[in-house]
Amino acid sequence: MKALFIGHTPEDDKNILRLMGNNYPKVQLIGLKKPEDLSDMLTDDGPFSFIVISIDNKNISAEDIYNQINETLGTRPFVFIGTPNSVKSQLTNAMVHNQQTNALVELPLVLEEFKKAMNLAIDWVKKEEFEESILEFSRDDLHPMRLRNFYLFEQVPYDVYIELTSTKFGKVITKDKFYSHQIIQNYSRKNIKYLYLRKDEHLKFLDISIKNLLKIYDAKLPDRKKYLVLHLKTAFFIHQFIRAVSVSDEVNKLAHLFIDSVSTLVRSFDSLADLLDGVSETGNITFAEQSVATAYVCEKILLNMGWTADMTRGKLILASLLQDISMSNDDLIKIRSLNDPNLKMFTEEEQEDFKNHPQKAAHLSTFFNGFSDVDFILLEQHEHPTGDGFPKGLNSSGLTTISCIFILASNFVSRMALTPKSPTQYKDILTNMKRVYNTGNFKDPLKALEKALKRGQL
Image (tube, rainbow, N blue to C red; front, side, top):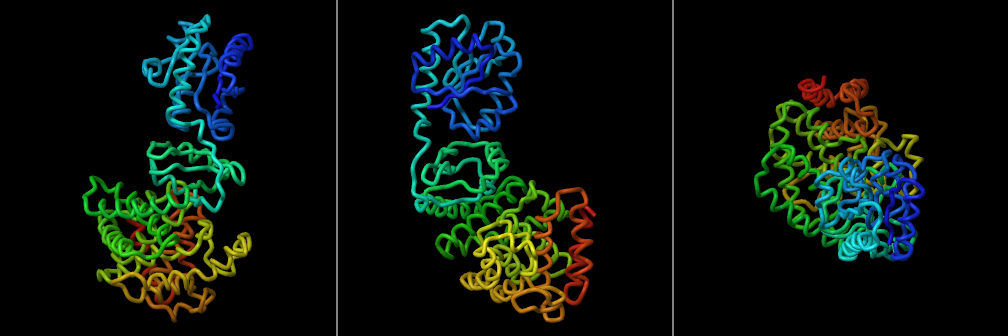
């Protein structure tokens, strides 16, 4: 069992370390040397079962550390050690009176009081089973999930693990426990791309989530922002379910509800820019965010062109959902052409996936009821006005207007993934696209997109 130790002077620390070593030899105290290293330690050197803080240390704010650790790791026991004066200056009432997890030991140290505080922390840890948080698995028993997708949730119904070695995995999210997005940010800064669920639990997670989403669509949500989150979760779980299983009747139904809800939400927003700002705050666009953003752009283009047919809307929004469903690396969203030199930075398997993904998406679209011709829209998603696209090399004169709408919307979102966030991001993207797409059947959709953005950022 590991405990994080934030000490004071060598003399004070020596007494604490001695008592810990004599009475709790199985507890490994890991010392924090510099306060600025705390964030790294929480994700690199743990998992920490509880925290011991010498609050006489005037170089730290016990309250700031307390909040940061709770924000990153969730609830952990704290043992505060210090003089009565430090208690008054360093601890808040909430920190002192949270007696379920926190304990106070006043100086000078008294063995029985010290042991009472440590036992409280250790007993709580044993109850929560943090000592069992490092487990051995075969990689085949686990399903990888992109780290960025965990921003969609605040809790999940199963334990989530991080890879420590090829066979050892540490539990970083406990099932049914709320977790902070701060921990996801910390892992992202360390270039960790995946967290893991057990495969059997992953399938249960998908099945339960699809059923829950169907119920949510039947209820009315209180504000528009919640519909944006609902759309992102819908895209994520549809992608995950199809990749893991297939297109089920429930997925079919969920896709129809998603289409109707997207249309309703987009009509309630004057500004397309406001909608797109809400989809991705980081700019590192995931497949779910790409699907939702493309759907929003398609719907706004249709509205500004005066196209109101439900069938047309359904085709384009379903195509938005399925466009990249056979690919596994979100960074391929940024690639639009087989001639893009950056494509060679991906593995051979990923390059092959990119080459074939329009055909695979087109095939999957035929499993959805109530739509026709979505397959040909998806087959043409990477065609280009000049004929430099793939798979057929069609130019603007050989593409229908509905395909041009989808190509334009998908390309706009791809450029969002490539363009740094700024007040002029959408204007800059549109200006660059005008040079290429102001031709043939792209002209009217391009004008409609410009009109949609003028109500917001431009």
